[in-house]
Amino acid sequence: MSTYATLLELALPDDSLQDYFEQQGWTDGLPIVAPTPERVAAMVAGSGLAGDSDIAAIAPGYALCSVEKLAINAVMAGCKPSYMPVLIAALKAMAVPHFNLSGIQSTTHPVAPMFVVNGPIRHEIGLNCGSNVFGQGFRANATIGRALRLVLMNIGQGIPGKTDMATHGTPCKFSFCAGENEEQNPWDPFHVEHGLAKTDSSVLVHAAESPHNVQDHASANAAELLLMISDVMMTIGGNNMSSGGEMLLVLGPEHAAILAKHGMSKDDVRHDLHKRMRLQLSRVSEGCQEWYRTKRKTFNVPPGTTHIPYLDEASQIQIVVAGGQGLHSMVMPSFGISHFVLEKIV
Image 1 (cartoon, rainbow, N blue to C red):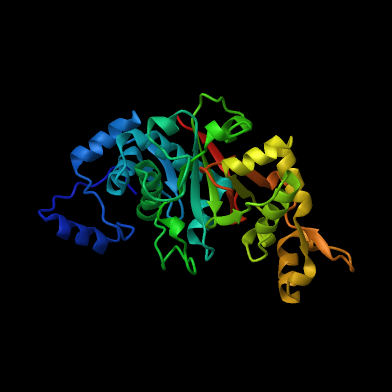
Image 2 (tube, rainbow, N blue to C red):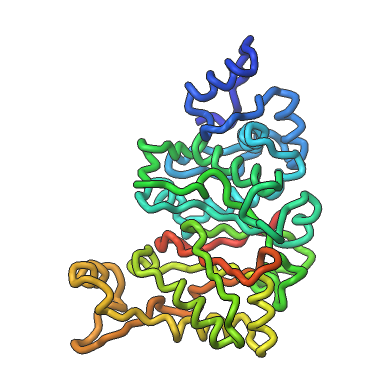
């Protein structure tokens, strides 16, 4: 497919233009902003790159996405030009082979790429990191995630019912973007933990299910809180049970503060959770046990074993801090056949 976009001349009123785009399969079902040449040019300028610069080949169709084609989808989604560096970094991250975008785009599993932004750019573009961080009301969060979904559909050809074979899908496929609440994080931010400078900006891409809430208003110490969190993480119907991969724990600032107050580092948290996360085999049918044995070596256990580790390694648990006031956290199980990618924003 050509790197260059085709200019269409359409003499249509706005309501008919929306109908036309829907008929071509170019939308996510929501109204779009018309990608006029002037709007697209302004978006390209926000990237600091030439419009014909290639970013990545987008699975499963593996068409090349240029800066101009990204800009078209960003305009349609309602983005500002200042969001372009985040969008470019996110596309590069999704194209890394071990993220397995082809599998994510075509699976029956309800998975969506989730984007977590770190660094100064969060405040520069008005990205929400606090209360209602995964909810409505913030243009940057909503439109960055939406623009990337439009690219996955329009460039990557992840088309519902044709190449995207999700049994039910998930509302997260519309948009799934947040910033880490670094200001209320008692530990190093995610990007610093993984080798970048605090002054760098980055985007984390995680192949996530919808968030699973952890509500704990009563635990008096770290051990009690981790007991609750580990129980929510041990969802035996998820892909992690059969396919491994990371799980992302998004701690609310108040829960993070409780753990840090009791002397726990991030590594302490993940190792404690890994020790607690033990599957009681009697909770799983014999048919599922046999199916899991073909998927994970962990299930090749001697007769008489009653419990096995839910995850193979503590390092499969990734931790960020996000959200606002309230004693809630979130668990994002993953597609499993995927590994997170952290990309520096340039």
